[in-house]
Image (cartoon, rainbow, N blue to C red; front, side, top):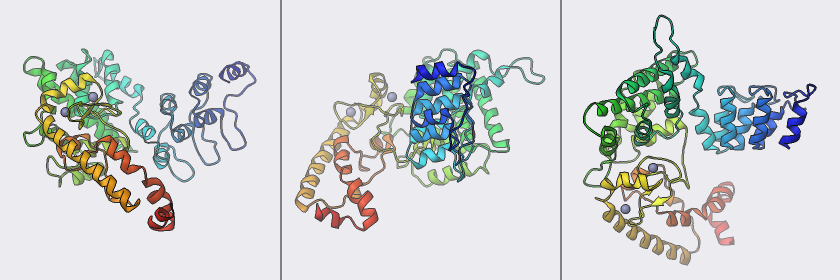
Length: 418
Ligand SMILES: [Zn+2]
Ligand SMILES: [Zn+2]
């Protein structure tokens, strides 16, 4: 219990960093078992977050990431856990988490940016009389930098909701600091292209905000609208796609492997087709791949959106605010989407009854990535997956094709046995 541990730890004779026979510290145990309050207690008592005595070289951060507990992963990072340490087979905490499918933890690790690294810019350096970043901006900027949702609309919303940030001079200071961090990431010995790209991208969005602030009233709202406005044919947000593509293209280090990868994935794609530049970028930066079972807000890209448009049921939002923000664009295609949805429902029903009469056969061919909510809106043929029909399709797969089928050959024998 946390209480007893607390009592023990306040005695001088108890070593908070003692190890068990496998070289595991109490902090590692608590992290692995997902005990946040125990982790916090141990850290308060000086537990070494970077202890590296485990027999296979695991750190507390690795155990946290393996446990899949986001808060503990975050707590380890905040306590100064190093992210590039590897275990005895050369894997980092993020790689281990990815291996066991803890993608939220991967995202948290890949997007962590210690506040101290930003605070550095809030003090005058060298011959500067003034700091590059006014201290009051460090908090708001840090919030943007550590976001895992890189949707351009979300970034503009984050700027817009903070009066300190939503101001031309402040944005200028922030984007210059991000450019400096980007440069540092590329020039330091253990180069970090991912972080460099993220900083550069955010810097580009901040510069867009600046440009919009210059002209006219309600300027950031205008920018949000521009980003959401869809083209007449299918509602695809062309300007948004162009903004993201342009940001990537303007990355100043053309020799970077990550840049080349991104360009290779995006260049052959016609605007309006899959994948969107945003989804390619997100995947590269957050390390998220193949999200199943998760819905993303059509407006701001936030994960876990659950409010469906009640008319067409084809778009989904975080809340009413996001829905209202998107309505001016969505109302033009809502009815068309409704027809598509109804058609799909009836086809799914037909398919289901056909499957039932044919016995349960493999449905592998229906496996579709659901990464891009925009795609669902923009390109109705590309399986926009109303939830019900997706669930129906997924159910039989893990047991038939995924596990048994994979080991023992085709899925048919099992299916007929059943
Ligand atoms: Zn939203
Ligand atoms: Zn609708």
